[in-house]
Image (cartoon, rainbow, N blue to C red; front, side):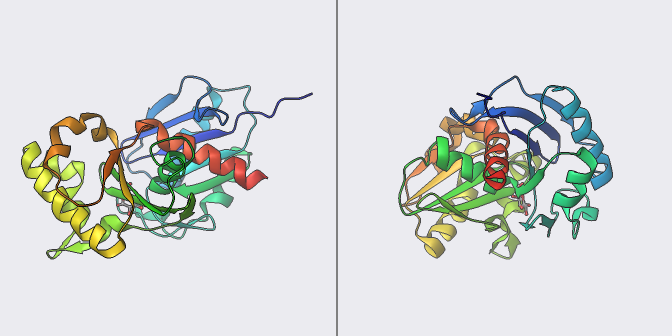
Length: 251
Ligand code: BGC
C-alpha cells in the first residue's frame, strides 16, 4: 500500500516565507520548516521564485501545495494587497503558481488558513457556534469559523473604528511603531475587540500571531465580555492550514 504523501504548506507574509510538509494526522510539520526572507518588492514573480527555491529544499516532495496570501482570495484570484506588492491584485495566483511550480497549488487568505488550522487542531477545535480567529502581526487578519466551517475573507482588520483603519491602530506593528506600552496597546485592543463583539457576538475569540506567545503581558489589559483564548498552533497555523486546504481541494 502506498502511503498518501504529506501535503505542503507555504506561509507568505510581509517579512518571511515559511514552508514545510504537514502531517495531517497530527496537524504539525512532518519535517523541519524552511524560512526565506520575503523579497522586496514582493511582486508575484519574485515571490514565486522564492517558493520554487523553498520547495527545492524538499526534493522528495511532489504533493499539492497550499499557499497563504495576506489578502482577499476568491477562487484563486487575489483581491487585495494591504501589506504586499499591489501587482498581486487581480492575479490568478492558483493558475500562475500551478504553472510556475508544476504542482497543484491552492491559495488561501493567511488568517483563513490559521482559522482553519485552529478549528481542526488547535484552540477552536470542537467549538460550536461562531469563533472569530484574529492574527495580530503587520496587519490584523481575521477568520470566521461557524461550527467548524470557514466563512472566508472576513477582513475584520479593516473595520473603520474612530475614523481609522483598525489595523493601523491595533496591529502588533502599530504597538511597535508607536512604542506603546502593553497597557496602552491593551486599550487599543479593547476598543477593537469590543467593536467586533458588538457586531458579531462570537462564542470565543482566538488570538494568534507571533505576539500571542507574550499574552501574559497584554491579555490582562483587554477587557471584553467574550472569552479570549490564545492560538495553540502559534506561527505554525498558516503552514498547517494551507496544507490542510490543499489536501481538501485534491479530494
Ligand atoms: C489583509 C488581510 C490579512 C491580514 C493579515 C490585512 O491587511 O487585508 O487579508 O489577512 O492583513 O495578514
